[in-house]
Image: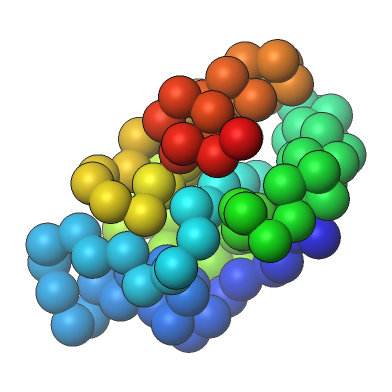
Length: 118
């Protein structure tokens, strides 16, 4: 199930930018963060896909959502300028970002190849 995060939740579960400028992932499972907005058409198409994938990979992968209108500071930390923006976070190494509503097969490919989740 996808989980909506505010700034404080993000700091606890993903990355606390107040503690460190250098990336340090706080989670134990790979994660996907969907930066979205309620008014965004492509975001509405992507939402059910991420919800489905979060169920499929439950216990292996966390899927988080951040509403950029409610969390503009958080969006600014990651330089989010358009939505949807998807952040793919492996447990080791740096996160990677994708812009736009990616098709499900492409997201699954990233889950396997970048996040190393099968």
